[in-house]
Length: 467
Length: 73
Image (tube, rainbow over all chains, first blue to last red):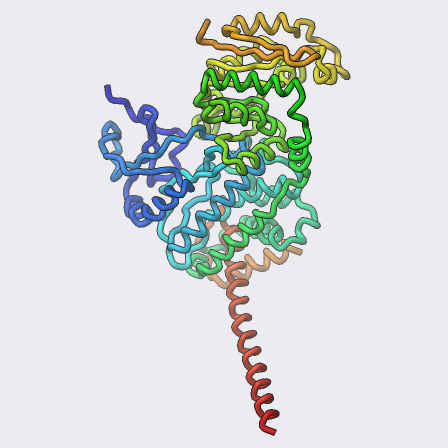
């Protein structure tokens, strides 16, 4: 049986190529004139791919897409990445790493007379904390005097979301998720205070760009694009604009200073308490027994238990958390250790939806779920009590994400839950061990359980396939 | 102030560029103008640096000429 190529619904903007899935393999068709650009840039792309900075790419036979009506001129095959994520799921540190990666590639390309035709943040993906560029057809030959065509897009998808956090202390995730093209300079400029504009970089890249944009829009018909293009942009200016942006972005830090607190938290919180020791042992035993090829750690915090699972036998971990500071710390831990640990922002009560063009351009978290294992530690009470989600539904959702896993139940006797209920009426009479076990037992087999704290916190290992 | 500045820039560019040709504006116009400006500044800096080098050269050659004459005396 031959598998039909499935067109990637997120790959439609660029007429030069199109991504297809055939079974679990990823192909990219090249159409029309794009072939000559590919031939001119493939040596550069190959070198970057060898360094792991661009996704591994090889030439595939054209007949893998024989079933397609629109026959490509050439077909490439890409290595499949562990997990596709979107910029609105990245923490500040991850978005910053992606921005620097993008600029570094551009600078090296420019030195070889190659440019990037776009600056979409969606073209950067992560393997662990390592950014990888995936759209090889975005590279094309540099034309003398050309402008950096994707500058606006770079600002909207990388720079402005970073500035939102670094100048104003607001995370980019919600805004970016609502506005898939990013944050416009006109919008960001409206939020800035006078003191922000004392910086030459902010003044030019945000304020001035926004003013130009607004003025140009109001001077209808006054601008001749051909003539602007004829004036041109010197290559040295192109290069120094990239370099300048790079060194500026390198210095950006969150204005709310969260990450320092959490980095301290990671180093000062005691790991040698009995509770965390038992937790680590339980997770290690689970990971060693199941050896999940893909483990999701929901509520990963700074990644302590992800690290335990990786050491014990998990091959790859995607950690999710709601706390930006914890995520940035987890990202920097993954960067410095090189562990296969990817960190993403998640409000579990409101996971990423299917959205964009025809609801298919950016996929929902659920449709990307590919975990073979799951850990959900110190998570249940945040959903069942803080967010009022019925316990049974919380467990159903978690068990639905992966066939095996470990879930921690935090009872009402625990100080954290007491804290959550301190100022509100207890409308959760059924929230307790008995209800938890009944609900988990309904969805999966409970393989083992262990109470790990005096307050009654208990870990459960489940297997939904063993039922 | 900035609005005035940018309006002036856009206006002067538009004047310099001659007759209006398009009623529709590329949404990247702000970025293009910024690049024109930065490209212009970069060009001006290169020119200034060349002048500066010449000025330095002028003075250093005068100085060394002076030193030579002093040495001769």
